[in-house]
Length: 321
Image 1 (cartoon, helix red, strand yellow):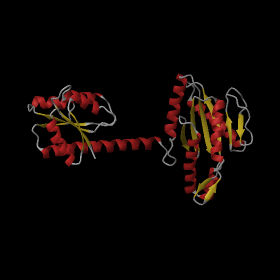
Image 2 (spheres, one colour):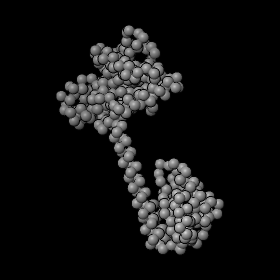
Image 3 (cartoon, rainbow, N blue to C red):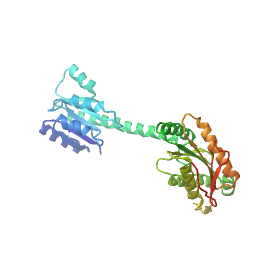
Image 4 (tube, rainbow, N blue to C red):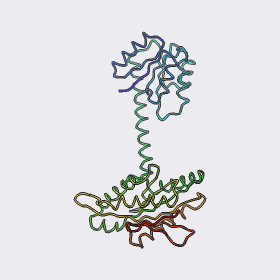
């Protein structure tokens, strides 16, 4: 049911107009001056349709419309201006103020109904357009299978977060996560089951991360996690928690209970000026180290030190940032 705001200082006219709109299936709200009309239309949950009388106490209809149009909102308000003025200059003035349509007093009920239907169709088209744009944006930035960010989006977020952390004098850690023996899972259970493993993996990773951490599918069975405002030692703890969230319980997919583990490589960015590819290469080197040391473990890469620090389910030493 569409909500309509009626604003007119003539209470009898408001009552008659409200009865008509209610009969036509609209939910009616009534105010009797321009100040109240402006207040109601500027609320976050304001009616999307409005019928404003031109001449009202406090603010006239065109002033109310201008105030509404001055606010750039996510949704549109369709405004029908009622006026006893019939000169072409007056009509143009009302439309120029931002009115979508006008109706001369005394108005014909069926004409009013037809004009309201036009407004409703326009608002419905806007709603569908916004939904389509949101869907298109989602598809452009999210992986179709896992529902998390895709490669292009997570790399763009990496640049953004690195710059933000530099401005705030914070560190940004990067986690490269790879599913161990994923080809064996596909070969043993089939690719459809492998797809479900990717979906469940994304959910488990999201549950193990902080609300402001970001995760994206980097490619295939590889994922990239951004951990803002996090030094290397703290990022290693996050990575180990993530690893455990996946390795602790088997994934129940259909009739199968599949053991899944991941290897994680960690690096930290201290300056956004550094090439982002270097940060990714550092995390990738640490990931390669984790793979070479038996998988199901976390490794970090520190460029200033030749040796890597490691953690695994059996060995979790003191960590250095």
